[in-house]
Length: 171
Image (tube, rainbow, N blue to C red; front, top):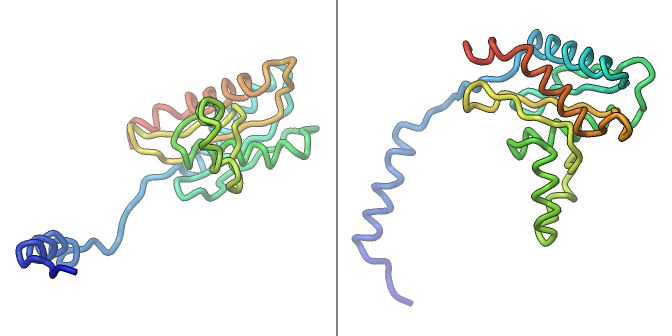
């Protein structure tokens, strides 16, 4: 086995030096506020009610913590967990849950992540961004297939995001 060349060792030391000498101890992350999450969920609920759907809405912050869950009167008990999974998928993959589902279908050999907790391929989850910064996610579940299913859930989620869009651009 050969010894490490001195020039390589020096290059590694220099590469690591800035990280250890001035490492940032704290980080600030932007995330969706409770007030914005409530406003978003309310607007999304009204959009879903407009087409006669009874749904559950989950809003997550950037750290994947539940900020708001709204379960409409008569919503299926399963819609609560499914809305959480849709939001979690949108947040952790930083894409609509429907797009994740399309990618998983197109690449069946890479289905390993489907076995992770709270991942779904169903439409209805959207990331929430302030500019290019991911600040949370919204997931909606409960619209029956006859009324548009996950695509309608996605439209309701977008209505919620649209409601707070001005606040996302100024923060």
